[in-house]
Length: 425
Image (cartoon, rainbow, N blue to C red; front, side, top):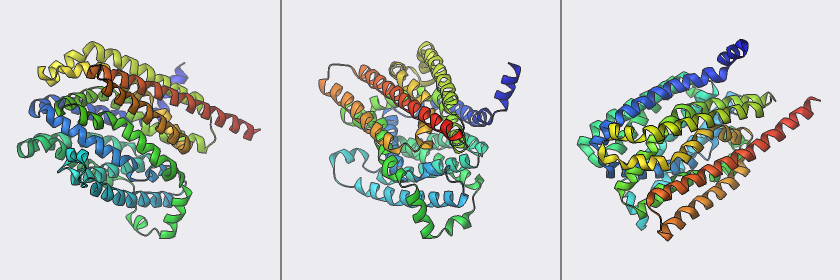
């Protein structure tokens, strides 16, 4: 038993996860500590605008790179990774520009974002830069920089959001988010292992070769990821048409509340699981048992986090947000299935990338969108349930989809292990 414990603490997975978890824990603690200040500074409508802005920015970011960025960790040669990064950046600039221009078309729905189009485009560029830099660090296992960047981001976003309230009021939350992301992204650019000369001198034929080599990513993964992102943003995108901004702000704050335990464990582990799984597959090592340990470990943690939320939700809301935000606790309870599904998703998300399951992911994304969209639209059309129960039903559907997705991924891993067993004979 002592030897097993010693090996556990010496494992690269635990060490690297610990590095990311430390930075995430500090950043989430700071974010939690800043919430009472921001909730007493900005109105619920301001948080509603931020939620709507974040939904659109996140959606465009999901396909702006054509998902070539997700392949950064796969090539054995660094020059190929540089080529993929350059392809990703070129695609992002083109797609973001087109998306912003489309939002200027005089369509009634786009009027909800009038005056924010350019800032949405800027948000996409900054978000992609940060994510690409983080993935680059995963490739070279520089987890310390990513960990520090999370802390830098939390502090910078709060500082700008609080300061800019006195200049922009409602939009201060958005502008503060942009500036904070820019600061943390700049930190990652400065600290990452990167040869700008190699990056700039990559010939066009090299870009074409790598674009063709990983063509399945834009062919299948881009559309499926865009659909999945649209699906995750669907509640807010629909709420803009059906409920007041103040209520969207309360819903967005509830999402923030449940995101704390998720970000602390799940997001810290996500990057490390991706890197370790890719390494295991490249070395033709068994994955299933390792996968299941992580999955069920995250499931147990998510259940414990849910219990804590149920016991302390009202207290947290009253103390940290103030009495005017009391409804946040009710929405947070309804979103517990989302907490669980988000917590247990990292192993499956990593497997989809490592096993290049782009075609499957595309089909899954369509099914997910169809079920979630029909659920929300049906409930809003019937208009027989209160908003909180609509949230609960939507969250339960989301959880069932994640469980089903992981079941199929487990079958894929089993086939992989059978194949490597045959190869070794």
